Amino acid sequence: MTTLKGKTLFITGASRGIGLAIALRAARDGANIAIAAKSDIPNPKLPGTIHSAAAAVDAAGGKGLAIKCDIREEDSVRAAVEQTAQHFGGIDILVNNASAIWLRGTLDTPMKRFDLMQQVNARGSFLCAQACLPHLLKAANPHILTLAPPPSLDPKWWAPHTGYTLAKMGMSFVTLGLAAEFGPRGVAINALWPRTIIATDALNMIPGIDVARCRKSGIVADAAHAVLTRRAQGFAGNFLIDDAVLREAGIADFSGYAVDPAKKPLPDLFLD
Image (cartoon, rainbow, N blue to C red):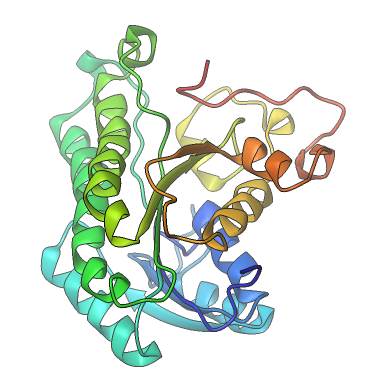
């Protein structure tokens, strides 16, 4: 399979950034996409809403469905999943993209922020998978793709921001467990992570990043597309890196993804 035409994707946090980029890449194939996110009214600090994202999906050749959904709320997630399945006649793919970030040490991490990260990242990914799996198990080539790093217990990733690392690795361990449980039942459950820092609005949370040394979100979107068009059977439990996926697909030149091709890209967190 080389196209996502006619496939239905449920993408969390897809009103902007990497989630929107993945949605638009699938839309160019003619996919159906549920934009499940909290942003239903414009925010002056962060551009993009579920409505603008769904309109962009339509304009790109897909069919967008804007759904206001807080993945911390079980009822909200289950209602959004059912609305998607009824609207499009099923669900083929879940992309766990929504994530909360706070790159501070223990003494500078309010418990409210700690709780938010655990609820959105690990718990949210688990809940969305739990809600989507009954539909995925009926799909022809079902995938769950989570934006999470390879699991690591290296203290250098834990010391600077234990709360965030715990939440992000939680997504990785959820992937590991679901892949072992549902991979044998034909669901491709994998994780994808960027080799370099990606230029998105989330960078506003990280002071001192040189945006010119980042890559554009298109590299993650193209890698996700390459993963989601693979045969699901027997393809689970992998922790994939965006440029490695594309290299395997025959792409060797990544300069087109660079914000500034003259500058060496900054490596992302959690990768040695």
